[in-house]
Length: 316
Image (cartoon, rainbow, N blue to C red; front, side, top):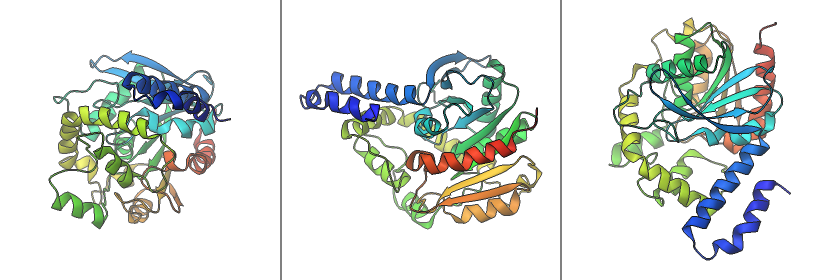
């Protein structure tokens, strides 16, 4: 039986007692089992720029191609765990919590533009002594991937753009809610509001126990002031609005554009625009999937990237 589901069965009767401490223990235990199945271990690294990073890293596969995975706005490294599980043994993964997210340094004083985050990731990979790597990013992480490819073209072997910002063609539905409401559905301010965030983000969400959602929602709500700062920086960042600038045409790395056709945030029309602008791009569109394909459809997403990364890997 799937070890994650087994762990839930073992604690489910105890959770009926409503013990917050036990719920948190079950959450950490379940997430830990998922990481273990994917061959990932937790690490803490401090870089010269003063950022204290939390990241997940493959336990072995030191001789395998290295892949840096970048999560999206308001997310963290755990978004990639099920995807990595599908590819364990084939690649060496580095999966950080970005500054402002997860367990990495989070303050309202940092610059959270795409270029600034890309520079920090270059510093991280230098600290880990990894000279070259494939990069894939979801949503905001895709825009950071593009900034990384601009800043360090000699290091970035390929780009994976998963429902990526950068062109940031928002759907009419999402633009309407931002214009008509004082609150951003991607910035929950209570555990209850996190349910709304998940509905916007995923069309075919994996099973998540209710108490997991409550715990994750509480963490997101606690980080709302930092999320507000990140959103403000993104809103005026040229790195989020590259369409028509000519920047993408200068990026010569192979690129895979993976998109969920039912994305409610960044429409599937982004795909054709990326294909037209990037010199060496191909695309895979997944039907019935929303904004986070690597979490919603990890097997299909992994299959697409397995082929792409093998073809993009330079000959030694």
